[in-house]
Image (tube, rainbow, N blue to C red):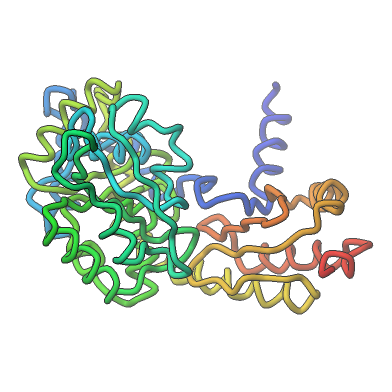
Length: 353
């Protein structure tokens, strides 16, 4: 590809309105500069000063003793589950949870940990009576229930603070540890106007993605006690997550924590604006709490609508229940362009049926 074609391709990508996920964000100019200037070392030896700084900043921000940098949130969650649970142990988890539904059963496949999936309620939590009923008695016939794992946000929903307190206190009273898949925990904190420390309250470990709404190109942080982080460090190495000069990525994470947290409110506002626009066009929309909008699309219209949107530079993973996600790369003007594209669909009225 020659230089002109490359520039044209890059411009075309920049002009796309990509609503598939907040994982599609690209590093900003300031983030790229921070990455280029990052001081690095071999992180497997603990020698990367930028990684060490990121881990210290994250631990302090969330109120934990220690933290560990991972390449992905999936690996961070899995290492946490394996640090909490031994072979043949069990963890309680919601049926909608990412660690259960979208991570290829890694806890069972790689960790020999039995998941006990429980039905989530409308707020995204697991009712306490379901948790209580699922805890196994001390009997050699059963797996040992060791851990309660929750998620916040979950499918864009924010766990109520009172539920968070009650569920973690209940789990601890039953001898269970608690883990939070906090991939979008900063969205929850911004929505509730609370600190990161408050958002993590009650959990023994929290996995935090830097590569979603915060806009880093890769990376997640696990925060926990020193002893659990040491166990997770061993599992990270076994899972192939030991990185060398990872400070280049850690610098992006530090930049994101400093510059991109408060601006998540813009994504939330844009999601509300998108939802209102699609509702006005007659579509059936689930009102968003954060940056995730769900829209019902009749199955028979998906192919035609996808082609229509694609011709207008709108990228969306259409399904009968379509998830549209606002993020750092989507301005209000791009949101308006997406709304117009839906409205201009020749059979727009059919989408509401």
